[in-house]
Each structure stands twice: as C-alpha cells, then as structure tokens.
Image (cartoon, rainbow, N blue to C red; front, side):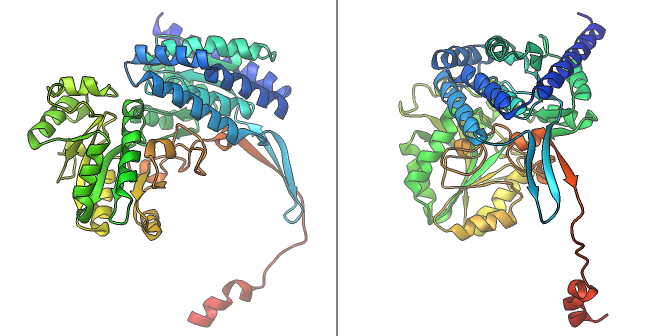
Length: 469
C-alpha cells in the first residue's frame, strides 16, 4: 500500500469512528457505557483468554514474563473497573444552588491512543475502557511488535461489543504494519491524543495540533533511610524490579541508601536475589545495555538467565540471583547508569545523610525522569513531605513496591492506570494518573445568583494595614 493510500485509510477509519461515536453518544446512557466497559474488561480478564493473550504478547514482543503479564492484565483491569464502578461519567452530574451552576459531562469524540510494546494488552484495554466509559470512540496505534496480540484481542472485543449492539468501528486499530505516517495522520485527525511510550511519540503527539496527553520518561529513584525497615524495603524493591522483567516505567532504576545502613541494604538485597557487581562487571553491563547513550535490546526486559548469559556470569552467579546491583558513585549524562534501564538491574548509590540522598535523587531525575515518581522507604513521614516540596516529582511512593503502587493499587488511593503524567517537570500536560476524567468535556449551565461583590477593604484591608495605600 502506498503512503497516499495508507493516509486515505486512516482518514476512512477516523470518519467511520465519528459515525460510530455519534451513534454511541446518541444512545448514551450510563448503563450502556458501563456495560461496554464490562464487556471489554472481561475479554482480557477471562482466565483462559488472559493466558493465551499474555503468551502471545511475550512471544511476539520478546519482552516480559507470561505469568507476570497475566497478573498485570488481571489486576490493572480489575482495579480500573473498581475505580469506575458507580461513577457518573456522562450527562447531568449535579447542580450547585450556591453558584447556580449545573454540570454536564460529554465525550471528547474520537480518541487516538498510541500504546507501547512493553504493555501491548493492559495499556490499550485501559484506554479503551476509559474511552467507552465516557462515550468516546477510540483508535489504537500499536508498536510493530504489539500488532498481533492487539489484533487478536480486538476480535474478541468486537464480538463482545456486538452483543450490546455496538459496531466494530467504535474500537479500531491502525492497519498493520504501523508507520510513523499513519500514526501522525491519526493524531492530527483525532479529538484527543493519548500517548504512552517513547518520548518521540509523546513529542509527536504534542506537535500534532490536537489536544494531547503524553507521559514523561520513567527513571524511578528510591531512597532507603536509616529509619526504614530494611528487610521489608529490599523485599518490595526486588518484587518491583523483577516483575514482568522490569517492563514497567515505574520499577526502581536507582536505589540510594543512607551511609549508616548501606551495608545492611546490600545484605538485604542479596537475600532477595540481588547480586552485587564489581567494577569490571558494571563496565561490561554498561557496554551491553547502552550503545552511544541509547539502550540496546540485548538485556531489555529479559529473564535473569538471559541477562547472566550475556554477562558471562551464568555459571558463577548464585542460583538465587534475580537481579543485578551496580554500585555507582557518579551521576550525569556521561554515566549510563544514571538513566532508565527497563531491565533486571539497578544502580546503587550511597549518601551521607538524607539531605545528600535528596540531592542525588534530584540530580538523577534532572538527567531523566523529572516529574514521574520517587520512592521512599522510611518511618519518618516528614521526609515524604520534604520530597513533595523539594523534589521535582508528581508522586512520592512511601514504603511500597514502586511498580505496583505508582499506577494505583488496591491498598493506595491513586487511580489505576498505566499512563502516569509528569507535569511541567516532565514536559506533560497532566500531572496525575491518566483516568476517565481526562476523556470528557465539562459543560456548565450558568444561572444568576445573588450578587457577591466584596468591599475593597475585604480584599485589601490586611495589605493596607501592613503596607499602606
């Protein structure tokens, strides 16, 4: 297919989506929208289908672990449905007698969602559910390696939606093979662009001329201070670092241990499978994982046996090894370990005290990861407040396994999501977890109320008292 024909095909897809969305909104009721969400959610959560799709995703992308993807698909979808249950996301929401305002919610229209190869199932389902909950149509642009699992899943989604009398054109995927030209055309024609994945795609979304929601780079730094439960911290870090072979942008990339507990941290990480590397091994790791400052795919989201094989450590590493720990003393663009890894290893820094740890965490995320999130293992809650005010981060995750907690979990208050906004620090338009509220337009009916015009001294009295007129 020529590029001209490819673009024409995108135009046709968007036009068909508009027809489908208009009809969906015209039929619109919270009951219908909620039923559509249930239909899509069960497509992925049904155990046999979840297993089959997870196996396909790992086979085709070469990233992650089947059992972890099954768990991720289940938990992320179940958590999202919990968040959406009983939520009014369409039509008349309420009236405020004091302000005279009545609030209505309406769909954005046609959503363009660019989704990554690291989560080729959970992320698109999250986007589809949020879009359908709010009355939108959605068109998905997968990465090349995510085409087959998404295509297969859409067959089941269309079948499920057809039982509700809803057309296939309500949820579509850009025809294979994906291309930059197709994705850019889609982003230009849509009413809202949602981009999860590479920063090149995020920038393209913002440059499309369409309102866009993009996310910043993840590069999680976690601080362990002298008040922390070191054993519990190590267990949570290990669970997060190894889950789905570190495909999550929210898994720990650097750990900073306060000097007084540094040796204890190293020992605790070793007990949960963290193998401490020497300087020669760290150098080899850097050469394997980065070429000219760019991550290679050699170790990316691979099983630990593959990592150890590539490191020539398969025979010498303890059988209990689950991830690698690379001690670091320097931070900056000339030190690759400063950046995101998305693999089964992390950098380990030591800090003289909490002030020093905060400086180092900020330095690491100034290089990459500004705005995303920081972890803290501590029993001093005041230090979480310091991070909130002194670090350029939108989330401070306290005493939790980071990759589970950052995108919302059953034991914290964040919305379930696979797309985390990083605010102005990360060059993003949102600073919270992507959720259904980002998929609606708000309409206010405005009425007159008794006038509330203040006297000048109500506004300026305290200022005049201090500084005069």
